[in-house]
Structures are given as structure tokens and as C-alpha cells.
Length: 593
Image (cartoon, rainbow, N blue to C red; front, side, top):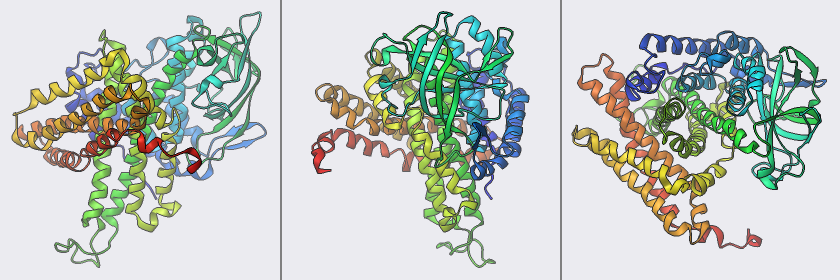
């Protein structure tokens, strides 16, 4: 049976030794002393390992059910969700004014990785609720905040976001859901939304749907979209629940994965809705929720890769097949464990170096969000905006790849459901699709984020890399050779791609768009390479200062070396593809496909 053990030592290493949060000027970081931080992570680890993880396969096997208009979650989900709620885990970084703990977003992401690894489907109910909280917190009226946020923070109520319709997904300008103004200032919402994660369930008293709709006679396309709060049950002025709103579930989807999360078709038949923010400004408000969700989805890519790796590693140490070609490592047994074989090692090192590098990357990203939200740094918001499609797209693409590689370690057993690898791959697959399919993330990166503000954010990113390389060069020859020189080369590859787009993209946009997916991956490899430089730097310092955990740090250095030698060179492949332009991509006539 599959298992999970939260990697809290690795998380603490990134937070304390790499990001050095105790010395950070970001408000709230200095209060996270070792004792306090360790207590949070240890308790999150305990609930992940003991409560959430045992329900993962149960949720996959049983799935959600839909009977007489009511959605039921798998056995044990409600009890586990209540433990998360009662433990205060659902409001870690939320405003204390609304019942949250007010901790940095960084802590929420660290805890969120554990929850998503242990049980991705169950964790989504909380994750979407946090997104609804953020959208209302950022764009709602004071009255709306007072009415809805406290119960979203404590997950007495949960939240959803409703964008997709049967005829429109990416192109939301085609939206048909209507919002008709009533005399009392509310709106009548009519339409159908599909693929709504956590659209209905038995975990909470109420569900607060955030719904995109068009007010008649508004601007065409996405400029005419507004955002509305549409509760499952209307909320009275005193906070009590009122009548059932005119919103219902048409059906729940039968999906490839995340069976424990109810993906619903939602019907709005003249439901009462409340405008969030300004009319026709709904996309701006919804993007607050979507950008947060995209980071959460990137985290899901990491989480499933980590989960699959842990189980593949255990299997590789236990499974006896063949002999080590350099001499048996298990002479008293009938065979050696398969981890002795170079190709199995290569496979495992791919997974290990990806998971550890991605963990550092997304925690670094969370720290940039904290800097944007908690300081006056005017560049942080632009930087995380640039990195968000990379976090979402690259981590979910590679995260899925890692679950497949982990499955391969098992041989035929990996294809059998009871070993769990099938679930990890099936659950990971959706992360490449929802919250903006990865091809759209790549187009957004190249078409919008890269040239934004005359390339200011990309220039800032290059400045970070080059400053780091310059400041750390010649400190240690081994570090220079193994880490800084490859990093310098990869940075040049990323610059080469940017210069190509600047030269060719304006003349022929297809040249840029045909290379956008490769650019997203090239960018992702550079980011992980940068993280491995920073982790190796911290571990080299620890080994030279006589760290009590020398094995941990030597492992970090060796894993980083593997990434720099065997993974980072993919930047050159992606650059070559980008420079090939769009001719071979676009020249074939449609009729000849």
C-alpha cells in the first residue's frame, strides 16, 4: 500500500538555511523562530501522515456520489475536514480581523504542500475556499467582508470559482451566463457552469460560489464580465442561513482522477447574486483568485511528484532483481535491490532533484508574494507575476512526468491499482489542464508577462541571477565548477531566447508563440538551477562549519550536482527549438493533417 511522510526537514532547510527567514526584513518572518516554526510544521506533518494520507486511496476508490440532488464525499472525508477546520489550518495566513492567524503566506504554502501530497482531492476543498476568501478580501465591500469572510476563514463555509461554460473555457469573452439587475440592488444570475471543483458537497453548512456573468448592454468580450457572490444558502443580515438559493447541481463528472473532489455541473436558475467590486471589472477580481489558484496548482505538481517519489524509492530499496555489475550489494540474498542499477538511480535522481528544487522554487515564490503584500517593494508584484505561469506550467508538466517515472520503477506492479502509482499519475494529470491549460500559461508568459512594462520584470530577474553569480564566484572552486558555471551558461540561454523573441517575435508573432512552450520550460529549468545553487551554497557552508547533519548536506550537494549536469542542459535543447522559429510548425496545410 502507498504511504506518505511529510518532508519537514527539507522544508525547514529551505526556510531557515536557504531563504533565511529569521533574518528577513519582511514583516512577520522574524517572529517565526525555530521553536514556533517547528511546532507548526510538526503538527501539519502529523495530520498529513495520520489523518489525510490514509484517506487518499479511499477517496480514489469510492469517489463522490450524487443522490437526489445531494453530493456526498467519500467515507472519512468529513471527519478529516473537520479536523483541519477545528485545528485552525484553514486560516493560517488570513487576516486576524476575520479569524485568521495572520501568518505569512510562506507558511501556508509550506503546510499546503504536505496537505496536497497526503490527499490532493481533499485539500482542494480548503484551497478553493482560501481563493474565495482572497478575492472577496481584495475586492469585496466592507459589508461583504463582514458577512462572508469569518466563515470562509474557519471553513464553516467553503468557496468555489465558476468560470467555464459548455461552449467556452479559455475564451471567456464567449460567456453566456447573465446577471439581470433587480430593484433591490441584487442580481438575478442565470446560466450553466461546468468543471466546478468542490461545487457541492457535505463538508460545510454553506458554499459561497464566485460566479462570472455578463450584465446586459455591457461591453463586448471579457471587458463586459462582472463577478458575483452567489451563496448556496442566502445569508441573513444577522449571519444566519436563510432560504436555499436557486443554484443546483446538474451532475458530478466521472473523471480520470481526483475522485474525492466533486467536480460539478452547476445550474443557476435565477439565483440571487451580489456584485463584487465594479461592474464589468470581474476579470480583475477573479484573477486575484486565479493567480493564487495557479500557485496552488503548481504546488500540486510538486506534491504528486514528491508522493510518487517517496513510494518509488521505498520500492527500489525493497525490490530484489539482478546483481550490481560492480559486485553484489546483497550477497546473502538471491538478488540485489534494484536501486543499485544505474538506470533506476537515474530515474530516482530525476525525481529527487526535481522535487527538492521545485520545493525551494515555490517557497521562494511565496516569499516574493509576502514581500509584495507586506512591504513597500514596488518590484515584487511584477516579479511574481512573471514567475506565476512558470510555477504553474513547468511544475505541473514535470510533476506529471515524475509520477510516470516513479510508476516505471515498479515495472508491472506500477500498472496495478493497489500499488497506488496509478492514482498519483491520474491525480497529477489534471494540474496541467485546470486554472489555465499549460499552453495558455506559456502564451501568457511570452505574449504578456515577458514584454510587460518594457520587459522590466524580466530584466529584474536577470539582475537577480547575475548579481548572485557575481557575488558568489571564487568563494569555493568546487561550487564554481559544479554550480555557478552551468548556471551562468543556462542564464545565457534564457537571455538568448528573450533576444530571439525581441528580434523575431514582432516581425512574425508565430515565431514567438511557437516557441512559448519551450520558453516556459527553459525558464523553469533556470529557476530550478538557481534554487539548486542557493541550496548547494547553504550546504557547502554547513559542511565547512561542522554541521551536525553532514549526511543531509552532502546529499544536497550531490543531488544538486546531478541536476546541474543532467537536467539543466535541457536549456540548450529548448533554446534550439525556439530559434527554429515557426516555419515547420505552421507550414503544413490544415487539410494535410
